[in-house]
Image (tube, rainbow, N blue to C red):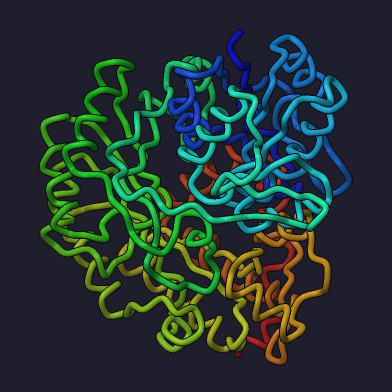
Length: 502
């Protein structure tokens, strides 16, 4: 009898004001499934694909399938191994509950956690008994070896890339990174009911879906050292690409097999090698599809030539990770290793080419002052007015595994014993911000956010009624109650006290 394996993406526990009904394809689990389907009976359960309504848990909200439904599916399938994805910290609460359900159904079920967040917190997870094993880093080869050993009834310990606990403590030996990504099989797309996904209005935070779409990853790893990012702990600091030929062949497969018309490149550094990127764009042009890169692109890896090719290849918008409007903050505090001059040059090129542009900004890093943070907000407003760059402002959060967390913990800028609920709240602009330094506290951050909202949502949009209507409908479609509350509060508090900001 073949080993039964159930791969699960859990429900999400989000800060209440952060709710969006967003569904995404569990690409990591799909890669794992493709690696073991010849040696097991494997299925994928994405708990976000559910008709269940969000449920309040204090000031948090659980989004996705109910635990009763999940338990029913586990009992029906009777898995030997349950792999649970903990890519981001809002998934941990659901992962822990599913692990308990598995052990209640059958204590012999091997529960294994994996994903980016697992890779930086595996010691904590194992110490607290959340699971039996953790996959640390890339999972494809590691998980296949785990299943092979399970099938042969061999010891499951001593596998590179697998962390576990015994009487001697937490044991782990890292596995080398996959050097030739082209040797990986395509994700197991056929294990998903695509039509179920396309019933939802929001996929990867996009607006109303009109096309069949799919995520794709053309490279792994990040060679940079931004203080707020922990991706190198999961995918490594060495950038490793698929060949352009592999990517185009992969896209053609999805177009012909599933009718995909739009792609989301989920790379951390899609254009890290400009010449390779040009070859990919050249191959995309004849496909006549639409695509974007929702996680953002580095301006210093772009050029007018590349942007022109991107537009010709069906790019729908460009997201630039600007981060700060203060060059010293960008270089010395965030360690972004890029220049505002280069960023503005590429944004001017986008405007000339009539490419829609969005930008990510972050305030609240140790070493910043109220004045430098205000400069970032003013810069965001300037870029919006001058070049129509749609801004998205975030507050720095000390995510486990980052240099930012290490600094905040060492200097006492955050409370001790942070948990996932704290982080979930902190990553919402309306949440409880965690970092306080000698130069600012959470109240200062809230005043800066009000300043930003007045400048962007009111001062600019009221002068541009069409844009204002689009902004309102975009916000309203995500959260009607919160949007109306914001409008009310803005009208009542238009004259907020900005003494600290002057």
